[in-house]
Length: 344
Image (tube, rainbow, N blue to C red; front, top):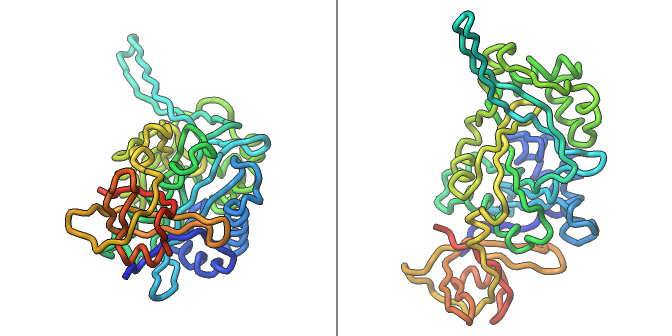
C-alpha cells in the first residue's frame, strides 16, 4: 500500500508542524508556536479561497507517514513577495574591479547594495524533512519538494512570472550569522533571531535603518565575507535540484544572513513544464515499464489537496491508468481529474 501522502496543512496540525520546524527553524517555518498557528491558518484560508486575492495566499503542504498518521515533512508556496508596505528586500551582489597604474595595484571587490521590490516573485520555501526519513527508499525529499512545482503548474495564473527560492547560508551551530554580526547588528541593534522574526511581519525597520549605498564586503571580517551567496550544508542538495530544473543564482542575497537567492521564470522550470492536467482512466497492477509519478487530486472541501507517488501509464486521450493502491488511496473514479508530474 501507499506508505506516504501529501495533503494541505490543516488546523490541528500545529503541534506536529512545530516538531518538524525544530529540525531547521527557517524564516518560512520558524520554531515558534504562535507563528506556526498563523502560518497554518493563513494556508487554510488560502486553500478555501477566503483569502480572495491570489497574490496574498500562502500554501503549506505536509508529508504524512500514513501508518503513524505523522507529519514528517513540509514545503510551501508564497504567492507573491513584495507589495505595498511589505516590500521584498534583498542585497544585490555587485562585482567591481579597481586598478591604479601609479602603484600598479589591482583589486576585486564584492559590493552589497540594498534593493526593494513591491511586485516581487513567487517564493517556494519551507522545505523541511525529518532527518529520520531522509534515507527512505520512497524518495520523500523529492516528493515534498516536487509537489510545489506541480501546484504551480496547475494554478499558474495565480502566481508570478518569476519564482524565487532563498537558500540558507552557512550558520554556526547556535544559529549565529556571521554577516549579521558584522553588518546588520550595527544598524538595527538586534540579534539575528529578533530581526528575522520581526521582518516576517514588518520590514519598515530595514528600509529605515539599513544604509542605501554600496557596502564593500572587503571591509568586513573574513568569516562574514565567506558566507555571502554561499549555500549551507543543509541546503546543498536543494541547490543541486534547483540548478537541474532551471533555476540560477540571481546575484541577490538575504540582507540578514547572505543566503543566496535562486530564480527562474515559470516557463523555464522543467518540472512545471512536465506537469500535466489529465484524468484517471482505470486502476492497474503496474508493470516494470510503467513510469513513477507524483499524482494529485483537488477538492473544494478539506483536505483540499492530496498527492501520492505511484506508477502510472499514459493512455493518451483516455488519461492515465494509475497503480491500484494509489487509485484506492486517492479515491479515484473513471474520469476523475488528475494532476500528474512524471518523476525521472
